[in-house]
Image (cartoon, rainbow, N blue to C red; front, side, top):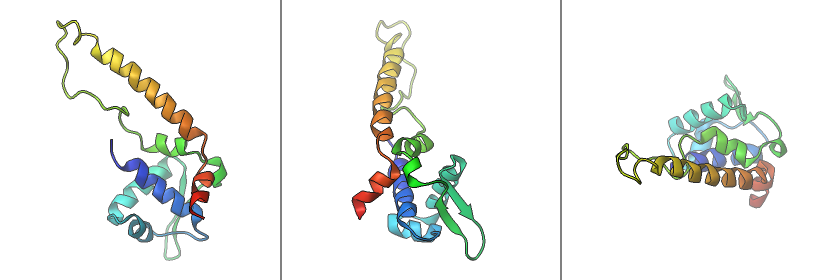
Length: 134
């Protein structure tokens, strides 16, 4: 697992809570990470149409749509890069009775776990999550 989902959710929660556009420096200060990491994640969230950016002196970042229309599953989908349980680094021996089948069974487990995660996260909006902090 990587730390992208917690970082993205932190960013999105801050944007949901703000009455104004926020800078990447402000967001990075709250998360306590380098602003470059935040800008990279913001770029990804923009690509997935969850965040809007305005350039210039009075620019910054805002949500691209109301928080009630964004689920935690939307955020998870934007940052998910690998199978939730991970992938083997090597190819198993195809002559082994376990090795020749292990990946297909692991893929099925990963699919089931991912569906469960998506279902759970899909039931919570960003607004619902943000309300936990008020």
